Image (cartoon, rainbow, N blue to C red):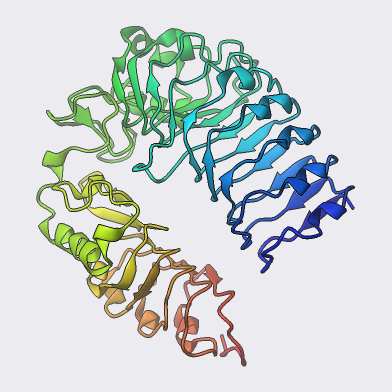
Length: 447
C-alpha cells in the first residue's frame, strides 16, 4: 500500500496502525487521538509523507522520530504538542516540508540541527495565540538551507536582529520565477532592516509587521525601484501611485497600517500616529478610540462567556479594541473579524455581535458556547460563519442571514432536533456548507 488516508474519522487509538509497514503516505488528520504520538509509528520506516493535523496530539514529540529516515513531509499543524522542537529533526535529511504551526512549542529553534536539512523548502511554526510564549531566542540564519523559500515564524516571541547572513546562500537569489515567502511578523525582532540581507531577491513577500524594528535602512529604501515585484507587485504599484516604495515594505516609526506596510488600495498608506514607536506598527490607539459601541459589544461578549476564565485574553477590555486577541480591524478601526477559536468561552454569545457594521467573519469553534441568530440580518457584510466543535443547539433565525454569507461551518454541535434544519436551505448564496458529525437523519429538505 502506497497511500493510506484515515482522516476525518472517529479514530481514537493507535492500535494496528504500525502494522502496515509498506505505507509511504499516511494521513491521520482531524481525529480524536488526544494522546502523545505513539512511538510504534516510528517503525513505519517507508513513510515519506506523514499528515497528523488537528488530530488531538499532545505532549512532547517522543524521541526516536529520526528513525523515519525517508520522511520528506511532516505535517503536525493544529495540535497541542509541547516542549522544544526536537533537534533530532536534523537527522532526517530528506525533509523538505515541516509544518509545526498552532501547537504549544516553546524554547529556541534547534539552529545547529537545522543546518543539516539541506533539502528544506518550507518551514512553518506560526502561532495564533500571542499570549503564550511560543518560540523564543534568535532567528537562525538558515544559510545552509539553500532551497528554503517559504518560512513562517510569525506570532511567537523571537528576539534580536535579523542575522547578517540570513538565507545568504539561497539558490533563488536573482531568480524572478521563485516567490520567497518570508513571514517574521508579530515577534520581538529588533534592529534595522538592511539591504544586504534581501536585495538579491526580486520576487518576495516579506512580512515584518508588529516587531520592534528601528527602521528600514536608507540603502534598502533607495533601491525600491529594483524591488517593484515584491508583494505581487504592490511595491511597484505604490511607487506608481506617487507613494513611498519603502513604506510598502515597512511603515516608518510614527506611522501605522493594519498590515504594517503601505498598499496601493484606497487609504492604504501608512497613517501618521505619534504613539507608533517602532517601524511596522499595525495599530494606533488614537485611531480607534471613537468605536465606543463596538467596544461595548466586544466587552459584553467577554463578560457573557466567562472571559475571566478564558485561556487567551490578551488586551481584552483595554482601550484599543483592535489590540484584542482574535480581533481584526479595518484601516479605520472597525471590527471586521472575530476569531476566538479555542479561547475557552462558555455560555451563550450575545446576539448584539450582529450589530458590528463591518463584520465579515466570525469563528467561535472549539468553545462550549451556543449562539443566537436573532438579528443576523444586521450583519450586512458577513461572509463567513464558523462554529464547529461547539454547543450550538439550533439555527433558528439563520434563514435571515444576509446574501453576503458564502461560508457556513457548524460541524460537531449539540443540536436538539436531529433532522437537517430546513432553515439552512434558505441560504441560497452559500458556496460552502459543512454540517457533518451532528447525527442528523431523515430526508433532506428540497433545495
